[in-house]
Image (cartoon, rainbow, N blue to C red):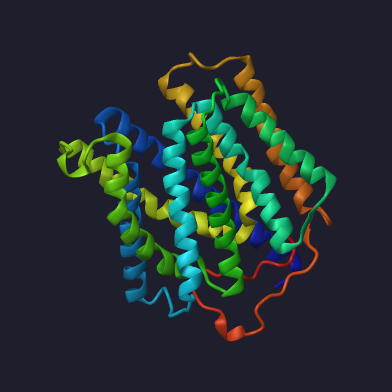
Length: 334
């Protein structure tokens, strides 16, 4: 295959992967908002456990159909991933409850520099000046859009700190495990989803009761709320899979930077569907800055020296490669 054709194919797959993630992520936000705000289903951690249960069922069906081949992930690696991922889920839920919306958004923005720090320390990644400046523009734009009142207390700061670091570690670990063990997205989900589903379904109802003083088993289920729960779980299959695909292709930092496009899109859809009360010059300016920063980041990081590893050791055992969707074909440029 000609180099140009290979590059075009990779670019097309990158765009398709990213659009898949944006579509499913925005869709699940809208469905969950309706479920929680309209029908009072406030059991976020338990709902996430149900998301991973349906994702597990999907991987089992695909394994039975032969689309997922046998692969190996050491138990210590799996346990570390599940710990990071579950602390991320719990931390984000608790941080949202204990902090103001403004500080919660600042905490989410801080995931980008934390992810950069992890790549610099563990992967020896070097960023060009333009790449750093483009990230700063994205952060500034999203901050102008979303950060309003900012108040913080000790327990809220601790929850946000745990949420930021655990989320960053979990996303870094997705990319790390895929590269180290040559695992495709389906394979990695097949290993991690059952463990996350089991742990969240056991501890989720307890945590939700602690946060809301309500029990999930006493919730007044209606036909509409059950439909939204099923729809949320169905969309979550795509959300979980697309996250693994995107991080495998783009790395955690790029996933975080481009991820703020979803924030902008949710704001725009919110103004479109729910009125323009919050739409003002400040928000529009923030959106423009964020989009400019994202475009700049894409150009800067793709240039030679924009973002690259100084040294990285790939697995020497080619027999470790498994799975139908393998992102390990990416080159050393990140």
